[in-house]
Length: 294
Length: 294
Image (cartoon, rainbow over all chains, first blue to last red; front, side):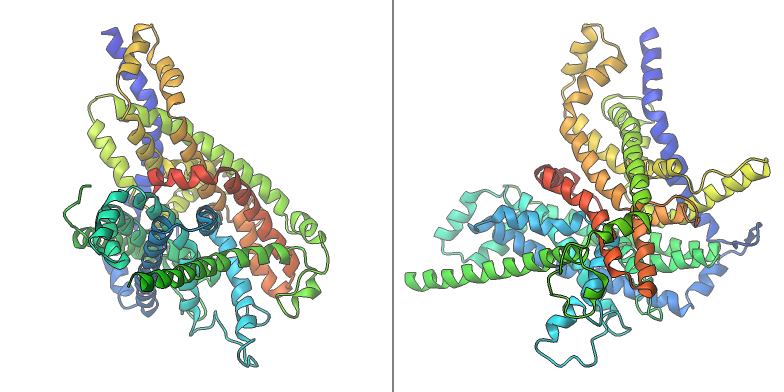
């Protein structure tokens, strides 16, 4: 009996601090996102007024919010597509071919992932700078640049952000797929090679199906994390500008908070929450395949 | 036929090297460019961006360190990162151990709750966390005290640690469940209590997982800027390094002190690059366990 008493005390001491902190800093704020979205609460008025779904009614007519959702979805689709195709192809090349300096390539490709997004946006502002920027000076060698290309101007800003996001993510996913691809047995490729399968056939018939489980989980997480990554990039690179051209949903939520419209800001938060849950369920469903054993 | 595939193979190899080198260049060159820019004098920035620095202009770093207060921010970042990691380990290790290796009522519920926490991105809930702490400060002020929850490095560390709990517990319990129960039984027979067993027997075995946790969270906490910016928004209050850099980058748009800004960039990324050089193997291998982090 004493033993079980001390066991319970032990377990309480172990688990209670984590549970309490998790409750205070994650569960309560999450609950508050949903609760506050039903209230009108401002920075300068201490009291909150219940307004039901009014915030959402305004929200779905808010042209800047709609634009921010469109931009976010655009970023998620394009960035995910390019990152995954490049990462998987490069990983397959680096694991399958005997490449000299394979390790050096791996080390270099992973570097962007360890840098702060603020640092990356600093690097890219040096690249995109209209006068004396890295990119424009290279293009200037081939073409007259008397009117410099405005990479962060209204027209090109989304493209510029897409490039920066792919640059940051590609190495991380490549290194991850290299790990799972190197677990695929060499003998499969040998016998496929004897049967006359080309490298492309081997890639689609062996590599992809065998690492599908890994692709599937990472794909779901990556798509969802892009909601957040898009925010981190936009906030530090453009703050949503110029003229809301690069606004994304989380940044819009944040700017509404800065404007002091807390209830409205949380309505945006609710939409993001529901969107990300629904999306991960859909991606999970769509990518479902019979798992292959090898 | 045989010959044809061989020469095609040579061309194919060349193409692969070419593409890999191009990708490596697009990563290395901008990063190296920032290092070079950090030792250029301000007047060197008006002209071709590809000219080498005229000399080592260390004054940039002195200015960034003192004038832009990056030195002070650096110390703040060191404090916050070290404190958050310590808190995280002290809280998450026992919790993961208790949740993974003991049976008790509510275990399943807690495990599910922490798993669900994996889907809550901290930037979705940053506004309610901010409002909660602000309300706390207002309450303390009403009682006649001085608000201390916002603009506080310790509170920021606590928020960092708490929001990293779900992933860390997920990762550590994943390791703890794989251990055979013989270890504990042997220790109990030798007369060790629950705490001694946990600290002296189990934790040392989890060293590789603990190192992975430290590495990933070092990068996450050191590079984080949204939470830090929100919870420490007072102009006179403490700031962490990425937020300081962001302010510096925004101020630079009008002041045009390029050298100082790039020196600031180097100061933020240098610690992560050095750490990466030292532990790149653990980092790229550890990610197969931590691969799901968003």
